[in-house]
Image (cartoon, rainbow, N blue to C red; front, side):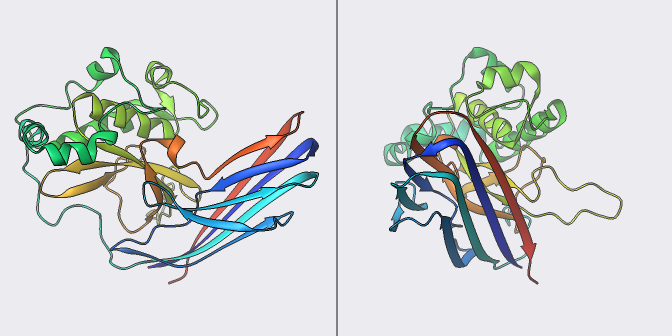
Length: 292
């Protein structure tokens, strides 16, 4: 399957912005089952240069700066992505590595634990306490496969939480999301990661897009035709395996990956610094268009 991704971000400022520095993280990753065939970025007003970089996690980013007054900023990215195989994303063979065995692997294999440490420890937006750990306690049993336990956790979040777009912001603590039992894909991913890390396992935040083909009479999956977020968990003997707690599915070819990191703070679509004052309005439009 091949997709065209169009992501348009527009800022309108009440007062002129004289200086603006920004980092774009919207280039789809090239992976064994996903190829980024083309990526273009168009910015208005046009910066003098756009610098491509690869960050610590292997994500492709683009840096630009503006030094002339402007009241509107538009960033338009267009990508062509090809998913090489039709897959549900699940392992070919079931994983039987139990939680106890996985924890033992991390303890005995020091090099493995060091390589995963940043995904096991707290991060800027993913911290936990006993309340968060207790929420997932019935999902993680030592004698059960870790893969199965993560699926149980995702199903629990999907079942017990409501998808409410305007409830949270980037800075909403996980504890508030847990108390209110509502949020968006970013919140559910952060909650799942916090629960998983609280038991000593490695989990990372995945940013991307979701395209769905709902059956007749059924609604589209939440997060469709928009930026989406899900999680990836390190399963010994298998490596990184993806899970989508927002929709209770194992991501497949219709989940298109742009970046991953410890949490959202590592991979926001646009991260910038402005030198101005006054209010601003933000509008984001995303199209995920199947090409074949």
